[in-house]
Image 1: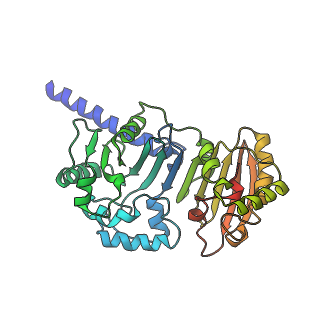
Image 2: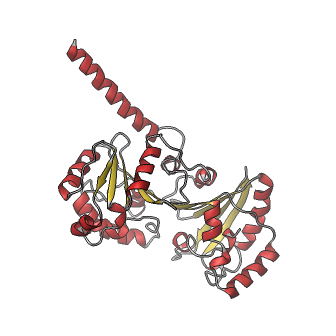
Image 3: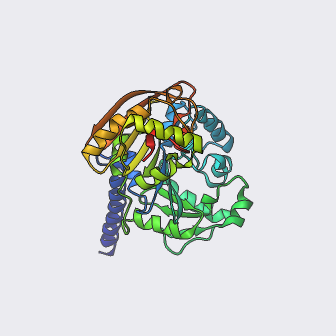
Length: 349
């Protein structure tokens, strides 16, 4: 009887793990949508890299256990195609692969989340069975093991420096979610613990960017902003006085713009860029589609030159409160990395 009960309990536990994986792998949502659902409600900026897609894009066959030098060579090739700018791990990859056994060369995906409370890097493993091996490596490296399975493995700056000087501070503290095959890392304990609560369904996730994330489809890489953050970080206010004056004149000619509720710029598998901007209502979106298409086809004050030097605007559509601009980059132009930092006229509020 005890043996039967034990077998029954083991079966239930296995089903629980399977259910967790089905929740992650199943459904109609994209991988990006499911990853963003793990971001805490206070998140302002998210940076997505689909590492399995990046490896396919550059035809990299690294196997299950590459060494750090192989990963660096892969990343050099991916960098040339503007496929790595959204990652927080590129500079750490050699030591990370050799010491931790995971890196952009083996990860399934990465979502780097930033908020006023701190940053957390959420990493999807290619195989949940990698979690126990990673736990062994953390133990051997000197991380302090938590009392609970989903607790924080504490490393700290001194330990990280001993492991390798190239490691990002974001690897100081680590949480392992074995059922989901997810690893979370941060340079601070508090935001990491908060992110674990969201991943476990015990705290609210970010929702204000849902519309632009859905409109982005299944990108190789993407930058996603809340509306307020986009209006602050991409607005012309950060440009010098001459560029601001030029932007004001261009905006007056182009038409009316409204504040965004969300913003995303996504690099697709065909190399094109989709920009998605969400608004309070359909009327605002329809107005902004025309205005922002005009702005995206002209001069680029703050960036220099014209937007036409960087891309061709293929389409501008307003639907259900969301404007999408489809951009075809000029060969050799790094549109995603260039236009997700600094002032961007067509993203102004």
